[in-house]
Image (cartoon, rainbow, N blue to C red; front, side):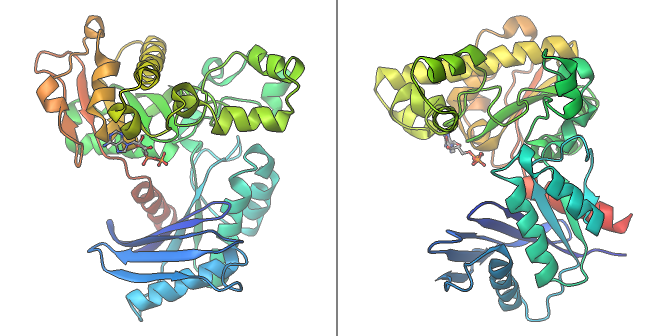
Length: 393
Ligand code: ADP
């Protein structure tokens, strides 16, 4: 079966992001926000022509299935004769059940429902998106593409926590996230830097959420996120690595409930909490406040510390790739991370690093043993590619 037109959906609790691909080309994108309350749809073509920009009626905004009918109408506005051949869905958690994308059958639907508890803020909404798409595009294949799947090549020693083994067996593991991004960058290296594509690569996906991955010959060795997206690097509002003892302290000494602690660590921590100013790197980079400077130094240092761990576990490094909103745009972060790592063969070129990565750029000095790059990621393109592969197999 030849798949030409693919709709990629990323369904969240109150939003659905969508992108339409024809071949490898993204031709239309947009999102619905505010589902359940006062919802809004916006969709525009790749050339920037706005096709829809309006509020949804109460009926249209009542759930994901209703909202998908609005996306269907938008697609018809784009091209009245448009046939969507397949729908690719971002699904955050694949548990141990899924180590690759999968065609959603009745059984897979049930299996997905069975792992909702592992990512209660994401997976139930991803599944609602799948069910909504089934109704909007009857008979068309739906493919679930998992953020965790790329990391299922981790060995036990990188995947387990040192708590009694029965929890590991029950699924308390370091799953890792951002798999679509790491997979995309790993494949993209074959186009932009084939000499390192099969080597040892560390990818730093630095966005609002952030994680790093050690990739050897295209396979994940290990990654910084764990059981949930709270582990690893300091992020916009998430704390990253923390001594679990802090959580006991907050609950026992400060009388906080688990919900309050979860809110503190997920929404009030990271750059926002440390700086007291903003979660956005742009604000912090422009700020004169010493707390902003301190938070930025902290951020770079966390990336550096994880980089050291990943390189040690992988046994070397041939290339370091920055991606995500911060990795692609913040020369200051890239320079801060690489500073002092000359002993590892990491030598950044100040001038080359000054550029924004609108496309792949090399930012290492010619003398650098490690190739340093900034490459724009494209998680939707990866989902579209995986969807095509599954449907055409
Ligand atoms: P998400 O994780 O939500 O997909 P992105 O990968 O788009 O987010 O990253 C968003 C973050 O990128 C912003 O919060 C901001 O901190 C950072 N960012 C975007 N542009 C710049 C820039 N020019 N300089 C520094 N940081 C930037």
